[in-house]
Length: 364
Image (cartoon, rainbow, N blue to C red; front, side, top):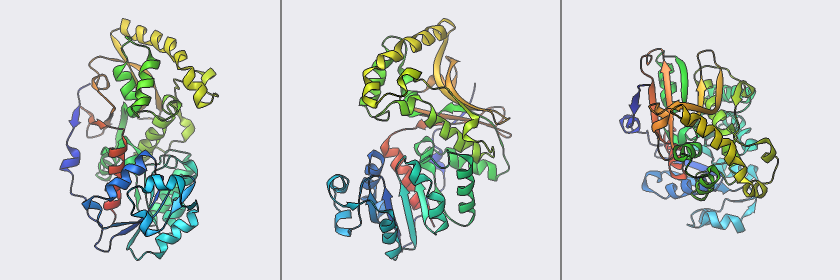
């Protein structure tokens, strides 16, 4: 499949509109790897108009300005700080004199995501890497769109492709009267890495252990191998393209054998070798036909969506990826002869945090 590859779309896009001189007040929810990277970016000159008035992990929080300014804030929160209380965090936003009040959700919490629409309705802006609302049940998506229609700003670039210009491109095409016909791609950085590397020369479990060591997977790799994360991203893209898909309408192939699904994380990690034989067999079958395995997400014109492991030819665009690259091939009414392909690093705390910061800076 030939493609128009956009490598430099970000650099060609209009400059981000800076926040007003009066600045923005931020509350950061989640100080894990992405939240920690975001905290580092807040210390750079480009973020000089942003003021952190609250930060929280899953158990503790901090609203004291002096402590929030500490270089070791992330580590301090693990030991010190008040008990987590979102009411107090929002009160800190309300008490600020900033023109913009922003909640930054750097978590994967379904509970927190369920509050996004309410925060928007209450006048806060929301910037997020959390896919659980937009990529969850359809009523939640509709509630989110209703809140946005009332004037709230929702920064979601980090939810798909770790900030690659996928959602922004799709929205722009649609606003110009173009329509998505089909969508195909590799939406997971961890699964991209695993199947870019997997050639049968070593067990799949060995690659998975290495990917986990490098931080390419979640601490429990089943979060990646289940395909649910890819399904959420596909739902977000499909919904932005106008397909009102429910979460139960995406066919998802999990790479986790049923016997390993109910185990604790430690038990699962101790039994990773059980992944090897099934995947080795599929690899050999694909190889015998001159194909390679890739974990793809697909959406057709009828709104039928599927994510799973498929065989592709060696000259397929997904077969030419490397590292943790994501790839999104959009066939539209105007990009019909050749799909529009957006490709680049789709995982990593630094690029995800940059996407969060970009969405905050674009608020006005």
